[in-house]
Image (cartoon, rainbow, N blue to C red; front, side):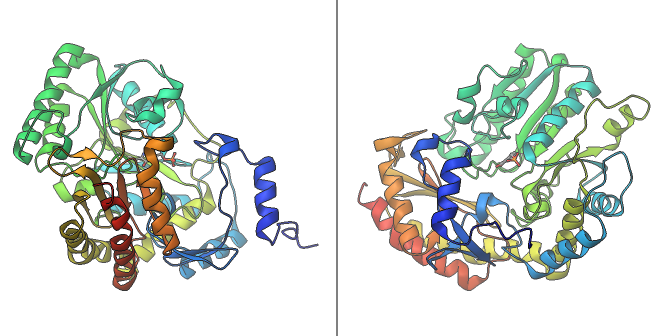
Length: 451
Ligand code: PLP
């Protein structure tokens, strides 16, 4: 018998089994009705009724090479015939090469990789490494951030997703990062925002006791909380503060890395080298779960004669690592980084600026590469958001209507609170982006009605 033969072929059975047996993330189980997806190709996925959606969310901002990239699928199939799993204590060819390639594209002396299954575990291990390396116990993490859903990573998270599991782990101190459009510092220019955000960090370090702080964690470009691109000078400023006080700088590039910002890593845009970088998602477009922590020489040195107390059955899983090797080689061969950068500067950026000109409900567009947010408001002067922060139920209605309008026109958007994010695969063509922008243009009429 074909061992896959019991997988159902019709949407109704898929839905029925899902409703009977699958427990979904971030959901009240009775209140959801997930759409069964039949297939996916390139920048699109298709449901069982043949409705095709342009994937302007790249799933969860991870399918950077698009769906079913033929070379990536073939590489996974090929490696699976050789080896599917071997535990982490052995050395493995795909793992060694994946680590080499990831270090090759990383900045500075980030010369080691600890592999995980995804982003949350990567951040969990990053703060463990930092605490053990420094012998300190506190970790700074930003409001308006997301770092994953394990105990430590969800405590680091600065958005409402953490509320349900508070108080979380001990020692997390929260700070405001830069966000000029809704400045916590009442700044009106990028320079002011940068200077005040850095002064705020320094002030917090004084009152917390800088000598107790192990790590400063930040998303290089904040992702689900609004594609917040830091002002020039901010990352350098954080780097300098970390150096001054012996604090480990952890850049979470789970979403921002591997092409999303039109760079291998977003920090490359500002020429800053963190002590640790966490990655996942785009490293292999999520075809097989994989994440990791890039570790610099100094922190690696700490664990030369001292045991690192951490590990995972699937750390450096051979098949996942083979898919990362193939992905990075495809990035090189197909010029994916350069394409993503060009899409940002020449297609998405100008295209969204035009939408902002036409639609009063667009308060701000911001981003880089294939990483953009459109922030929707009821009033441009007051900047009142189209829906309140953490809106649910009736409060969320305007954004739900906007999302429905997109879906009816064949575009799958990524919406969060009062924003829609434009985060297609890095490999999307100019024509696909223009098709998506035209649909957004139509759907924004819905938002304008609330203006
Ligand atoms: N860090 C960032 C910046 C993310 O965007 C995410 C997921 O969206 C995570 C960490 C968590 O990654 P994972 O869901 O793979 O655990």
